[in-house]
Length: 95
Image 1 (cartoon, rainbow, N blue to C red):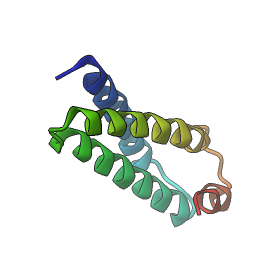
Image 2: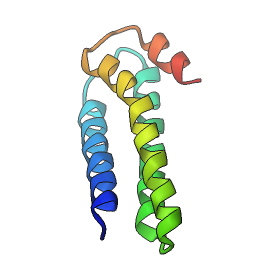
Image 3: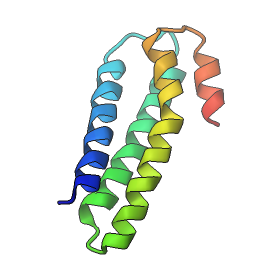
C-alpha cells in the first residue's frame, strides 16, 4: 500500500469514526441523524472504492476525490460537533 493510499484511508477512517460518535448523540430532530447517515454512507463507499481497486491511476483519482469529499464534509461535522440545534440548516444545506 502506498503512502497516499494509506493517508487517504486514514483520513476517511478518522472521519467515519467521528461520524459514528456523533450519531450516538441525541438530536431533537431526525434530520441531523439522517444527514450523518448519508455522510457515513458516502465516505464508506469512497473507502470501498479505494480498497477494491487495483489500477494505481484510478486509486490516485479516488484518493484525490476522497480528499475533496472530506474537505466538503468537515464544515457539516463541525456544525454537528458544536451541537448547533438548527437541524434544518444542517439537513437542507446538504440537499
